Amino acid sequence: MNSYFLDPLSLDFWSRIGATLLCGGIIGLERQLRGKPAGIRTSILICLGTQVFISLGLSLNNGNGDSSRVLGQVVTGIGFIGAGVIMGKENIVRGVTSAAIIWILAGIGAAIGLGYITTAVALTMVTVLVLLGVEFLESSFRKLRRGVHAGSSHTN
Image (cartoon, rainbow, N blue to C red; front, side, top):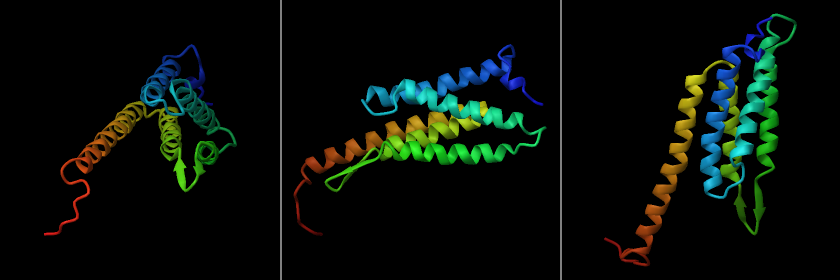
């Protein structure tokens, strides 16, 4: 059984834990600073939980288990958790970005669990860039709408 990544005395175990703390913490910090659900603790725990389940699933490869089934069940379970943060009220849907964050955190945790630590860090950076970049674009468009073009109805 390949359980070296589950052995707390191994460097690989701690490098996966460190990557989980880093990736989940970075995304969680961005969300926490904006006052959104799934802050630092939640983000780290989603990432860590997924990483642990994927690592446990991999340890079954030499036995009778199928690690791809573990991954499939994680995807299903994390979808359920993500759906729990989506709320609708008066034709306004809130929490979709938080649900998507939960989804990508699980993906990052799965990548770490599978040993793709560099990929997980890259995905973390892309996720934060999307969150910050789109926020910047949205605020820029709002400023443009409030400027001289706001309310103008002329056509060229």
